[in-house]
Image (cartoon, rainbow, N blue to C red; front, top):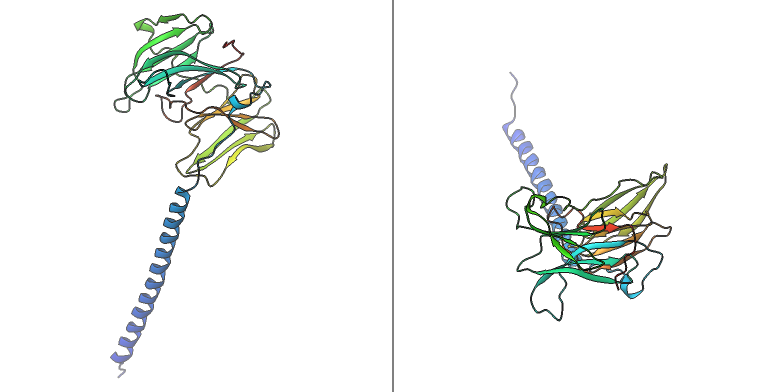
Length: 271
C-alpha cells in the first residue's frame, strides 16, 4: 500500500502561497509607483504654459487675403456692461471692427455667418436644453459696408445660421487632419499622392489647452483657421507659420468641435 506525506503537501502549498504573496506585493508596488509617477507628471504638466502665437494685428501680413467674421466677448473700456459682438477682421490682421453688439448676462450663444449677398447674418440662440439642436432667439442681417441692420423675419430664424466647415479637400487633392487633446495638437496636411507634412505641431503644453474646432480652408487655400478659444491662422506654405488672428472668440452653440467663424473670399474696407 502507497502512502502520501501530508507534511510534504502542506509545505508545497505554503511555498505556492508565499510565492503568490511575493508576486502580488511586487505587482502592487509597481502599480503604486506607476500611479505616483503619473500623478507627479500630471501636477508638473499643470504648471506648463498655454501655447501663444504672434498676434497678426501687431505685424499684419499683406499676403493673407479674406475677411473673417466671428463672435467676440472681449471687454470694451467704454462699456462697463457685459456684451457680445459680431466682429469682422481682415485675415492679414491689418484691421478689425465690431459690426453689431448686444448686452449679455451669460456666455454668448451666437453665430456670425457671411451670406451669399455679402451681408453678415448674426443669430442669437437660447440657452441649450437637453441634447436637441440650438433654438434661435433672434437674428439680424448686417450690411458691414453701410452699418445698416435689419431684423430677420420669424419664419427665417435659424436658416443659414450654422457656419460651414468648407471643403474637405483642395482641387489638388490635399486634405487636413486635426489630432488634439490634453495639451497636444497636430494639424496634418496630406496629399497630393503620398505626401504628408505637419502644418502645426504642439506637444507637452498645459493639459487644459487644445485645438477644438477646425481646421477650415481659406477660399484661396493659402491658409487655414482653427479655434483654441482664440482664432489661429496657419499658412499652408512650406514652411508653414501659425499666428493669432483673434485672441477671444466664442465657442459654437452647435458644439465645441463645430467652427464658429465664417470666411469671406475678399478683403473688405473696414476703415
